[in-house]
Image (tube, rainbow, N blue to C red; front, top):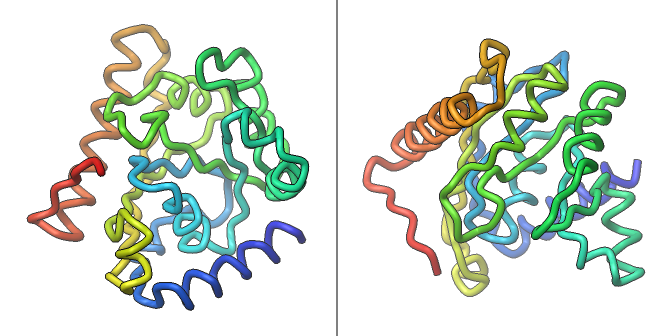
Length: 205
């Protein structure tokens, strides 16, 4: 209930601030099962747009441990299905928690496999979680303002979803297996970016 309320509030706020959004290819989102929604991390508000664009599905999130130190922010994060992860040393819970949620709840997972906004290297954690939870991976991309200034200027925001990717054929999450996962996901990201805008080029701000 709290997640639904907060997503509705965020949707209204984003509309007031920007009001110029386009959510493309929503019909490919799985309707009857959980999945991992992945995207390249380009700005701190792209998780908000992904959650709004993929409604009515509810999601859990990975959030850096430091954010949970503030009691007010901690309350909001916990009730929005976020769980803490150490960036420098993730630990077993970074795998066990999302796998449990994907298998035993109605929550899907929003994940940025690059780990940070300024990295293009996909991490192996995605492969492990998808394999253990036995869920598909749905690629997506955000194209739009990368600064608050441009967001308030109401420059267009586009979120596009891609066809679900089945990783069940990758039996081992060794170096070769992880590289294949990275290849499939990055190929999907590149294709989605081209479908939105053939001239698109992401530049780190």
